[in-house]
Length: 103
Image (cartoon, rainbow, N blue to C red; front, side):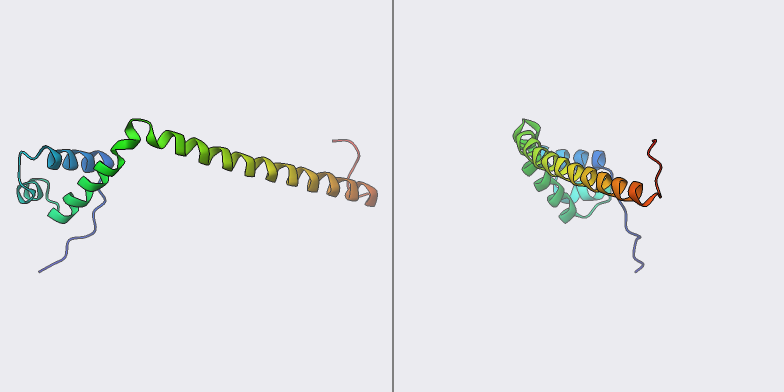
């Protein structure tokens, strides 16, 4: 028996298969045969869809904005640090005569 090369499915395809599984109109084995995907994979996509469904109604938006605020603070701190380093190096190079005063 030859092995099939690894396939990467799009998010649209995964959603389509998972929604078909949630509808329950066909069995998992019928869906697996129809979409040419293993039944365990369909079960996994179905559970991922059900877990992520709360994010559709705003549950994830609050968590994402809190994470963005933390990242923003870190980035502002890094900008300040780099500005301080640039000013120090500019002064040192100007005193050494390696950098002209005009920019």
